[in-house]
Length: 161
Ligand code: HEM
Ligand code: HEM
Image (cartoon, rainbow, N blue to C red):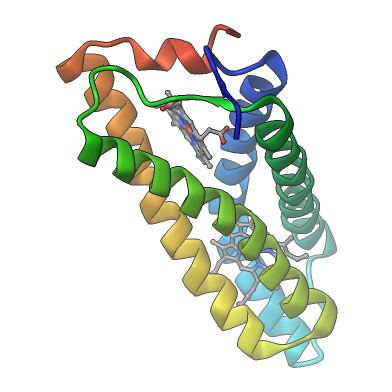
């Protein structure tokens, strides 16, 4: 993969759009669980609620495909100079795991919703919790860089480079 000086405008736009969409998914997850239960029992359900969750989730999937293409074609910046080799490895693998989950979470949701597979619903819930956990660590690392390491890493995700 190419190593560049910063993230492109496209990569930065996708990053923050994904943050908003994941926020929407976090808030609409409980609704979707209720809706899925109603559908499984053949009861009426609140369609707009389901639509919000499905559309936002599919948008995450579309954006991650674009993001992976951009990563492959444009490259990403190397670890900040302040990182030790161990921190560099942790950061790199956290980003890869988050990217992998951004693909698997919507796909498992799709299998549950489109295919009516109850097991896929369970897997979706599990993977979602893993994603939220890693994203929490990721955001904590960004805050750590900002206020403890003070290397202004957040600027990489604000100003295109
Ligand atoms: C990154 C994208 C997504 C995130 C972060 C997400 C997040 C969530 C969360 C937090 C829940 C509640 C699960 C629980 O607490 O056990 C949930 C449930 C659900 N989501 Fe998603 N979701 C995403 C994409 C999708 C997509 C694209 C679909 C369908 C096309 C979908 C369909 C479902 C269904 C059917 C449930 C109910 C599962 C069950 O109750 O077993 N999700 N989702
Ligand atoms: C749903 C929430 C989030 C997801 C899914 C996410 C995902 C990612 C991923 C996959 C990368 C690697 C670069 C890439 O492939 O584009 C990244 C980089 C980055 N993220 Fe996030 N992120 C989230 C939230 C946040 C938040 C809340 C902050 C700030 C508090 C943040 C700050 C950063 C920074 C500074 C980088 C660049 C790190 C570097 O270049 O080493 N992210 N993010």
